[in-house]
Image (cartoon, rainbow, N blue to C red; front, side, top):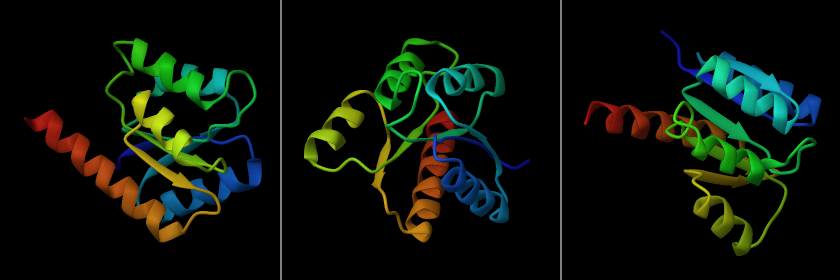
Length: 129
């Protein structure tokens, strides 16, 4: 069964590009375009991984991270942040809120796939332990 990935990205075109690339690599990927819909989708779809933009309407990415980590249902879902924000403070904040990866836009599509594979492999290993 293919791994389910939820992409939370407010830029519709970029979101479609990411979802298309993930699907072409064998993943079951879906897109939501605001923070509130993202948190709701995480609870109803139980994805194996979330790719999260930080600058989104209806709450923003850091708020999403906090809400995911507070819920029993979503606290163990790995999160890969994909953001246009730069600086060490951004990385420190997202890792402090529970993200497992952080890439900056513009991103390298192969690096995105590599991070997705790493996070899914790491989460499978921790579930087996």
